[in-house]
Image (cartoon, rainbow, N blue to C red; front, side, top):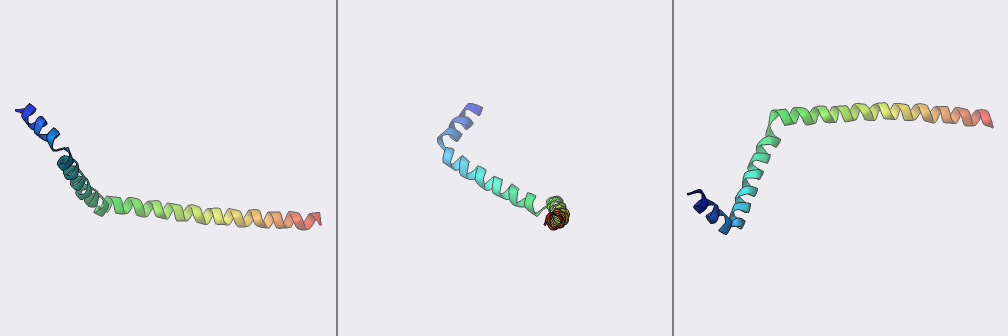
Length: 74
């Protein structure tokens, strides 16, 4: 019985690929709409924004130090 199903499936590879694509799209849509994914992406973006702010502060400090050093060397 399984051999007959497998043989039938092999004959219709494109149909199986299409059905697999549809199934993947449906599952992907459900995953992307889930609250857990929303919370995870929100936390990720919040962390990126925090790191960006820290990087901007450090850059401002480095720039001020460089300007101070350049002024002393003149």
